[in-house]
Length: 271
Image (tube, rainbow, N blue to C red):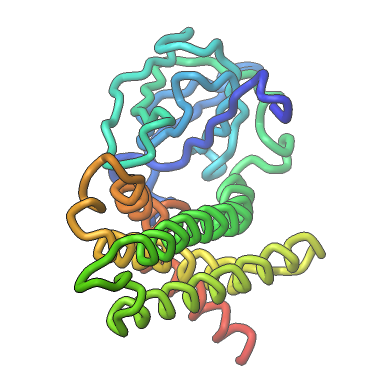
C-alpha cells in the first residue's frame, strides 16, 4: 500500500448512516470460520480499484471492522460496484456504491482480532481523528493555491490604469485570505504535532478540519471574485478550487459534527 501497488478503501457510510455511524445496517453473520456479509455501502472512495477495504459491518457483538480483500474491478465474489456516483469536484478518484451479497470473509480478517468484535466503531472513529488532519491539510493546500492565484492575478490585471491590487477593496480581500490561510496552517500543524507525539487530539483535529475547510471555500470564493468572469471559466484553475473545496466541509464528518466534537471535548476537559 505504501508503494501504491495496492490501493485501499475505507467503507463506513451507508445511505442512512453518515454522521450517525451507529445506524449502519450492513451485516456480517458468523458461519463456521467465516463471516457472511450482506449490505450496501455508500461514498466509497477508491471502491472499484481498491484491493483492500476496511469495512464496518454489524455483527452479533456490535459494529465490527473487517479487512476485505478483493481483486480490483467492478465485481468480485459477492462484491459489486452497483453505482458510480458523479460528483461536483474531486473527479480524479472514483466514488461508488458497493453491494455485498453473501460475500465471505475469514474470521481471521476481523481488524484487531477476536477481542475487537463489536469494538470496530472505536477503531474507525479513532482513524477519523487522523483523517480530519488530512482534510485540514488539503484545505490548507486549496486555500493557498486560491490565495496565490488571486494575488498574482491582482498584480497583473489592470482597471482604470492601475493594477487591481492598488484598489483598497482588493487589498482587504487579499489580507483576509492570507490571514485565514496562516491561521489554518498553524491549526493543522498543531493538530499533526499532537498526533505525532501520541497525544489526544480530538479537539485540535476538529478545530483544524473545521477552520481549514471553511478557509478553503472562502478563499476559493474570494479568488473567483478577484478574477471576475475569468474565474468562472475553465481557462483558470479557480473554478476547480471552487468545486473541490465543498467536499472538505462534508468529508470525515461534516463541519456541524466537528462543532459538536469540539464542544464535547472542551466540556470534558473543563469539567
